[in-house]
Length: 282
Image (cartoon, rainbow, N blue to C red; front, side, top):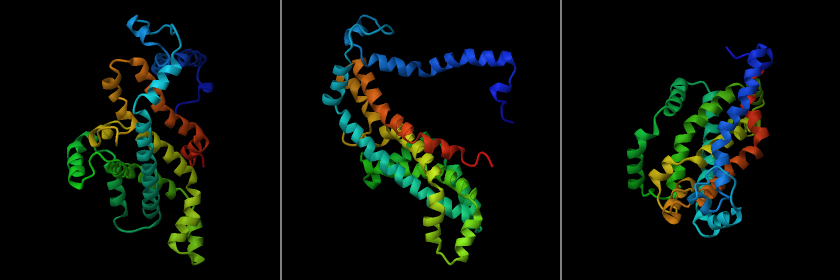
């Protein structure tokens, strides 16, 4: 079922792989490198059609200074942190508890409840756009960071529960039985026995959810408007109106917006890989 390692492939396949790998890497990183290059160019390079050449002069400090000190970028970044961090904490905390309940306890509707969490992941967001927007208006949560956090938690808990429930079911059940024999309450079993074993999964899931919520654009545009509540992904679009085709400033703003999830991934890389590969080898 799984592909053979490249070392076990025929020599021709290995040579093709080695030849195509740099090309694939260039195609993958090409757009990001182009945006990074644009962010240090002067505006004159764009009027002179110098799209792919080296900058005629390096204006990185000026461009990034404009983004930070002459725009609402700091506020958008702060909004993103105020939306993303509570969402990650809320979704992961709820999924740990629901995953524990669905993975440990055996009751009649266990499987049906689990299927409901799984099925929620397959509902396209576009179908829910109008009812969710109307609901936020009725609840007074439209154009608030709180509303965006609550709806992100609601939508992400399904996937997170699927992830956590499967992880908990792979844990040795003998540990929980031994704790029950010792008379430990279920809450203490969850807190002192199961939760410490879930640290790799929690780290991996936190990185995934942080990246997804930070990069979300759809719900940010549907549920918020203006610099008071919009995250950075939606705020970048306001650069069009503020700077009017200043592509070097938009590129600098895009690089700034992309840095936090990249930093988060590299800081948590060790735990992220451990969480994804845990249980892959018995």
